[in-house]
Amino acid sequence: MNNHPQSLRRIYSKEFKAELTRKGIHALIALVPSLAALNRSNTVLLLMGGTLFYTWAESLRFLGFFPPLISSVTKAVLRKREQGRFAMAPITLGLGALLALLIFPPTVAAAAIYALAFGDSVSSLVGKFLASLRPAFLAGKSIEGSAACFTASTLAAFLVFGEWKIALAVGFASMTIDALPLRELDNIFLPLAAGLAALAFR
Image 1 (tube, helix red, strand yellow):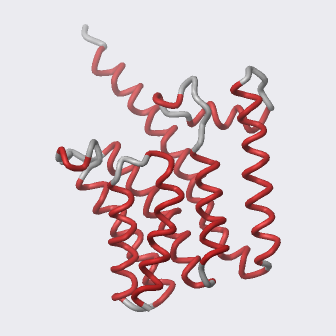
Image 2 (cartoon, one colour):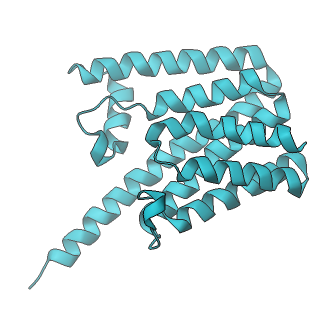
């Protein structure tokens, strides 16, 4: 008789699929270090061009014009709080990776970008759909999400450096930034913090 739980499951499933797609796209930034190893200058230009192209396409969408591919993907993965707003996450994602490439040496930049790609993605999925511990001091973030960010970032950094001291520093820095209520700006600050931590403990 009561279809309410079934409706909630449908909504929850749709929201999960959208977030999974969103974070799958987000995780593609992990390709940047491999591209930079082939040609750093071209990768920098690719990030700059991609960020500018998305900014143009999203500006058109925000004004009521809909470029076919970009706008349809953006609309499919928008979160509720982003409805009716200019979606900034892809821009800050591109800028975060770009800054890491420009500021840090290659191995440090790779660890920083992997922390952004995997630490942030896993944190969001775990925090949004599996977490239950949300203390007030985390301002809506969860213990489980922070732990997931720390674990993913640490493991990624260990694969880059092969040293637990550096990897743990990267994980802790990533978790700290991820736990702050920065919204899309964490895409910029997380790789910078991760990279600085790696430099400090090398």
